[in-house]
Amino acid sequence: MRLPRTVSMSAWVVLIGGFVALLFFGLRTFKLRLETGDSFPEYSTYRADPKGLRALYESLQATDLIHVNRRLQSSKILPSGEDQVLILAGIQPDQEIVSEEDSQFFDHWLATGGRLIVALRPEKNQSTRSRSTPRSIQEATDDKSFLSWRTLVQRWGTEIASSGNVPSASTYSTIFGTIPRWLGRNSFNRLSSDWKVVAVQGDKDVIVERESARGSLVLLADSYPLSNEALAADRNTGFLLWLIDKRRGVLFDETHLGLSERPGIMTLTQRYGLQGTLISVVAILLLFIWKCQYTLVPRRTKNDQAGMTVSGCGSDQVFLNLLQRSISQKDLLGVCLNIWLQTTHQTPALLARLEKFRSKFGEEIPVIQRYNVLTRIIHAKSGSDELTAD
Image (cartoon, rainbow, N blue to C red):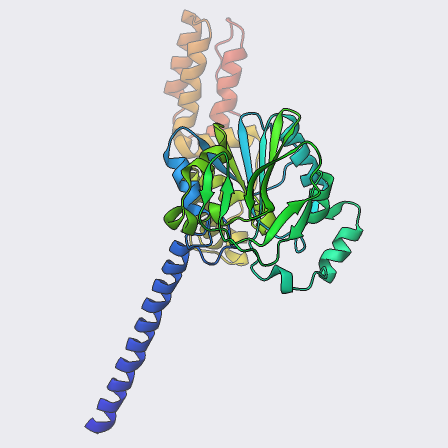
């Protein structure tokens, strides 16, 4: 008997140990993914691995001189771009589309004095890849309310071209010097006259800038210089300072990467610190449900409830019930007589007749007969002294 019991205990120990180990490593993996942010798209400010922009976001936020925020939802109300920078990194010109609403937002941003920075996703093998547009993107661009990023860049007065194989992996600029590592294989050509070349890779224009109304538009053929890896290994501080251009606010767009925020009750609760209020409401709701389901008073059947019914009555009946409960029958006539004497004018003749009535008619005579005699004494004339019982 001991052997099967020992085997059973061992099996339970192994099962529980395996469950605990699975739970432990699962939580560790989940925590690691949250810390690195590799579950977010590339070039997102939530991502902490080499392909994210979290280092740039937190570095600007730590200065306390620049207000940094993320754009996670579209709005019908177009914000002003005055003294602000809007950064869109990781753009795939042939794989992503722009809604007409976002296009109007970009135009409004530039018109109100904002600086718009658009950085393409680095594609090392762009020259060998097919340029065919995905069917879903093609169907979306057929709608007039959507257009591809390549089309939007053409509206701005330039075109995106593949650089193919270039002899140099670095980029040079007369403004901020050399960026030692450049991964993109795209460039910009057919620039209109209002564009200014900022940086080149060999003989290809990879960073261009254009003044637009009160703002400025910057196109980067590579998002790598903004990434966490570039800030750690190939940081060019002059490039970053030129990019921000002494603006007081920086807004990182996340909507084009597929990240969006839909404010609900939990989002608003966390934003405005209403956790305690929410817990109180839930507690009150649970107490209400408990009150509706259970009661401290024992439940009664229909027969018991029928026996507990009290019928109503008028004021006269209530007064009679009160008299019957508080005054005995033998004292009733005396109480009535005393109350009447308190409310009437007492004369010697009346008092004499009442004294004679009390001595002549005792309790052996029924109360009804005594009441009738007393009524005649009260209403009798002063000369009448005859007292008789009917």
